[in-house]
Length: 476
Image (tube, rainbow, N blue to C red; front, side):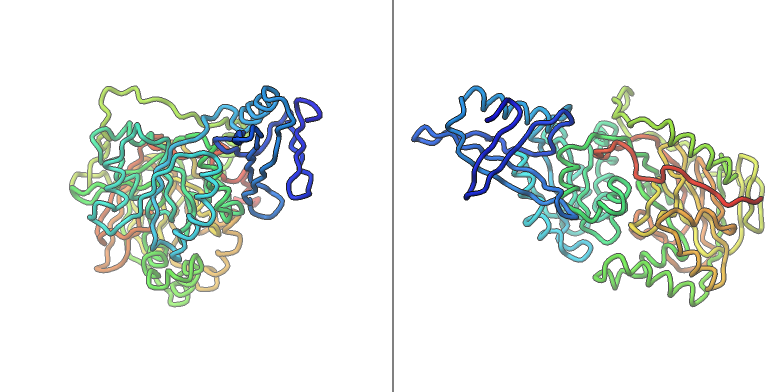
């Protein structure tokens, strides 16, 4: 050890140097960093994630440090541990929920080969639960309903967005829902869309499950809005999106080719636009904002002043899920001004559109998949973002795909974008699909309202990976 900052070891003839820097050290050390052999020799076990390749790789070094004074060595270990976990409690306790059949069926392999060794190197305490079918005790919703909140620091689903949806619905259905929803969820992307992971890590890093594991180990809880979706006396919860028309068809109508991965969404979209699909619907919105330029200016201002989200505390005396402010589909919902075509901007208040559409998409997060940022203005503002698109030609529809990964869909003149408090959507056809967070619900009227900041998600950057700034073309 040349000084208190640098340690040099030799392993298999190679020199290994580890130095403490003012900016910290990006490492994860074993719970037992220094061990003492019966012969009195001291061995240092050192584990870290290397960024030398396009994805993080777990590396481990072990060397004899017997020649270094014991107190000096222990101080070095203590210093590097403190820098690696500054402001973070190490050795977190995880309930890992694995869907062995999700996406392309690779979740179990990803867990065994990549994620489990990283958690072990970080000294995490892990309990693994494999999910079962709906209504079984091992269904993800049932797991969340019965989880001991005091036993874990986070839920870690190794799957796609479907298991996240089930976990949130399970937590929200508990008598202590407000407390339960504060249990952070740290997703490991192993499904078809992995939209939540894209919104946390971005479209590039979402391909790196090792980075997702690091996010679970070192992330901080940030708030997540969730929505109530009602059909009569049935109430479920949505954290990502609600889709009707072509957007629902390309999701639910392509389940039979789930094995091909995320490309199934593109195939479903192309089939729909080439066959000229259109959908009769009536949708009523309680609009807060509908002027694109005003909403973009507000978004850009928000991004410039954005500070890390804070977790917050439960202060309400009633810890149950909040009551519905707008009722259900069985209660009156004002229709307001009725329109026979899509229009914007409109005055705040209730507006009803009774017109054919190509699709409706609403939600709370910018990214719907790694290749599609359909709701670029979405943020934790207490509102639901709703996009309505009228029937279009196949050529216009295909052109609309271009730039979706950059949020350019917002720039299209036939993309009608609204910020709303609540909405009711009523299909006017007999059969079709409605998709809630990628899961199908009955094809009948449904109503949605938002509940701000109820759930918690782990994030190392403590903010959603949306656009830093949005621009619109010059013009009216």
